[in-house]
Length: 283
Image (cartoon, rainbow, N blue to C red; front, side, top):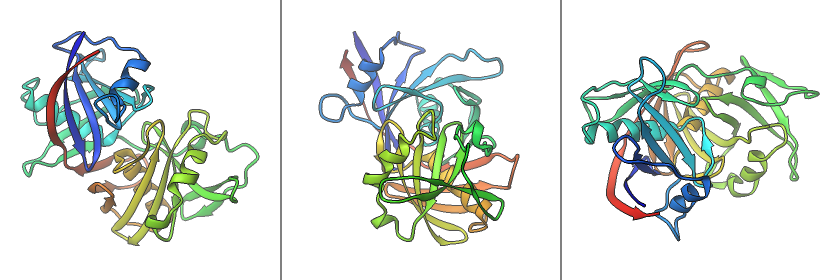
């Protein structure tokens, strides 16, 4: 079968976007992984699929497949690419849409300056709902947050656990450029305390409104940017008393702006989305 696609990115976090409304799409995890392969396929951090909604009151359904072919709950940078795609393709004339995801409903909005703001919903802060197995662990309070020790071969690290519809473990580092993302990222991703695996974030605090961030993403490895990772890092930083909203987040691929007014309130993420090229591939 032939599959039409669009290649996009949000701050360097790159995507294959597929319209499953106007073409039939029914691929296996192995086929999604083949598309995401950077040497033998198109190459992307995630594949985003646009479908008709199955939930009432929604404009679209948004499905996300990681580079390894596994389906995941949420992708913040992808949400910005999603709304730009459906707008450019004429699938909607709305500037603000309601989108059904595996993790719940999100509301992306096209801004007048070309950036896109996404209401990512309220963060999940209870460890068991992230999910994180805190049984038998003694957490350390910092501000209103609890830092949890993770045993790693090189010694324990303390992390904040947050879900933005997908699980994140955020640690503070002195310098993201020298942070051991490549070595400890996979260890944290597969740590037995996280039954669904986890995204590992490494946050350097520049000042109360500015951080630098690297993220090892579950099923994809380190990416140039991670939208939900940026949201989780800012939530963790505010709860620790290190940050104040809004916060500029510098990733290796670009800059995002994250705002959060505290527990029970939604996280608002603003940043770019870019269309790179379009194509057709034979599956």
